[in-house]
Length: 486
Image (cartoon, rainbow, N blue to C red; front, side):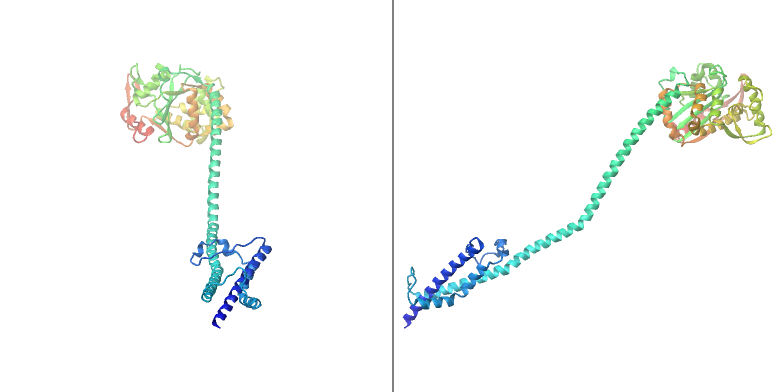
């Protein structure tokens, strides 16, 4: 009986295996017909690292055929029993009984059961592991989102930085354009100014001084020009030097100095006996006068401008006259000097006479200002040079406005009555300094300084004996700064 039961069990097992094979084959066919492609059976190794599996296996949703295959396995026992009942004890074709079939069959069933369980566990793990895989992917996505959020947070800063850079580039570009425009404008203005200076320069009288042509106009930041006012009625050197003013433009002290040199100073004249300062002009003109000033006061003077009566009168009238305070006595002397001027210019006597009953602030025209400057009877030569500086200071203040309103009149009245050894290029350089010079303070002064001279009579001449060392030191400190000229 025991043997018979074993044979029956073996037949049932073989029938069950045959049924399962047919079912599996039929499931494959159904899957191939439904999906268009056959899914190859996949072997799973429980010992493998789940992370090494392809990512697409975890994301793939199981097909209906796959589910049917698994459900078919679960229904296999009942179906196998029914099939075995029909077939009886006949073994399927191609199958041969095995020895120790009972134990073998048991072991096979146990393996198959374990395989099914493993497969189930594997598929379960696959399904449960898939979210973990997706979770990892999600963490990467979250990380990417975090990075994108960080990028979004950093984006405004980057945009601000880019805008700042673009603004800087824009400012640099605008600055370059402005600089180019200013350079072009400067060139055009410089060209126009040079042409204007050349046109004006052609109207004055140029007289070269050969011994000083190669000497510089400016030394140690100071331009010294000797202004010579002679009493010639014509533009010639036959008159006397009625006024001598050292005009100094100092870029060191940012001041314009007008220093009157008194004509009675007893000086050494190169090539001649000692004499009054104004005698040097009578002996050798502007050249000898500049040499005499440099020798006695140790100040380099290589340029001069000579002005006659007509140039002075025309200059004052061209700026619209000057307003000064005069005493009644000064007004009387103005009228007295107008008598000589009216005779020299063939004007009727009494022309431009002033009211002697008026004093205080008065307006002076050209002839009146000239008569006021020539008076040496009030205050001696010190008072006369002071009056000259007062008039000249007021004229300089009014020249910029006069150039705008009456430029041609000023040029026509002044230039033909000027004589100078300044070249055209030097005049152009001076014109470039004019804008800066308008910001400089004007300082009026005279030499000799108080307390550095005494009145004397030498060879029947009334002269001033001067402490030259003290006056040299004073001039250097004033014109070149506290340290003096280096």
